[in-house]
Length: 488
Ligand SMILES: NC(=O)C1=CN([C@@H]2O[C@H](COP(=O)(O)OP(=O)(O)OC[C@H]3O[C@@H](n4cnc5c(N)ncnc54)[C@H](O)[C@@H]3O)[C@@H](O)[C@H]2O)[C@@H](O)CC1
Ligand SMILES: Nc1ncnc2c1ncn2[C@@H]1O[C@H](COP(=O)(O)OP(=O)(O)O)[C@@H](O)[C@H]1O
Image (cartoon, rainbow, N blue to C red):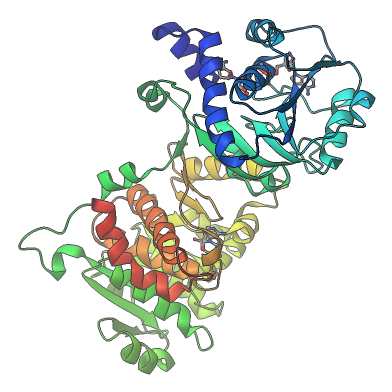
């Protein structure tokens, strides 16, 4: 992001101080929608860097916007001061806004405010908070005021490990500039803020898109560009034949969900390899889907006619399933591995080592740690996923509120769709069904995983518009509409 800031300064007729002004205006525009009461007591805490510079500009702009009770506190724990900050101090001092210099934390003990605007430290944080800053932040967090942070909560690193004992600002809202920061997507960020909103500050989007970064936040346009429309004269053979090895006596529902998702995501033909005891359930629930009864006599040739195979949902951990899994791996074609398939891999590392290139693993956090070792935080987990994806030539879909799709190239795609209404059993089975359907239709493993994760969450978002909770089955049925909507 810093790189993009610099680019605008060099390549566009806009200076750093003007960029700061743009950022502050964008902040205020949203702030005015959030805080309608112009009598509210606003305390604006400003550091000595550019984040503080924003805070000073925001104080001036809100004063001009007729917010009546503004107090500014300049935190001066060190001597260094950025140029933008100096200029904004000068501009603010021309107005009748009270400014207090804070040289030690105790001075803010009696801070009274309805709203605290936190502009102490932003993306320039270069070490954990300690001494005066840690004390000051603890005081601010203890106040009853609503805290709104500028760009980043003070003490929250934009990238890298979020420490277990996070001691930065706990904001109600972060109004962040241009793009969300990577650490916003990790569950540990819940300690630092309740929600964030992004405002455009006029950085050159073409340039940002062109920056070589391993991190990519997926957008509707990426998905639209990936979807291949159904072609004239196409038929079921055009869209591939998917095999889903799933289900067991008490988990037959998983087989039905994965099959329903595969069917609804457009596979030409879908077959489920399931125990004999599941045939009636499958035939009555999903008449379009075929069955391959699962027994020890299945030979490698029985799998030849399928374009793609997924294994795992509700499979069970019996030794014969392990043997079947090994046969499927020996076909040496990319496969999709989920749920019990992942559990088998975590105890059979020899099978993990033999996975065909471009296979897709879809672990949630526990499955991931079982496979690749315990992790203390999400930053470390993503670094491992990047390394494993690269070394093993796999696509690792690490599922969470924001799912991370780690590619063999080292790229990490972050999926923004999905919401807590879809946090219920069977949802992962549906995702596996969608990925498999896309692979059957000829999408590459990378594209199939990307498209599926996005569409799965987007279907859940649409359903959650008027539902408190959304079931996996509902998401499966929503896919055809979500696909169609994503084309326009
Ligand atoms: N052109 C730009 O660079 C723009 C920057 N903007 C703002 O600038 C911010 C980044 O500004 P800066 O790079 O000046 O950085 P900050 O304002 O975040 O902090 C800089 C200062 O904090 C000190 N510091 C870092 N960690 C500390 C710690 N743990 N304890 C005590 N002091 C610490 C640094 O030594 C430095 O002096 C962004 O978050 C954003 O708010 C916006 O105005 C948009 C334009
Ligand atoms: N809070 C949430 N926000 C967005 N997506 C979620 C949330 N909770 C769960 N999901 C999604 O639901 C799926 C759950 O997968 P998983 O844990 O394997 O479920 P199951 O094993 O029950 O099928 C994942 O795709 C995950 O990203």
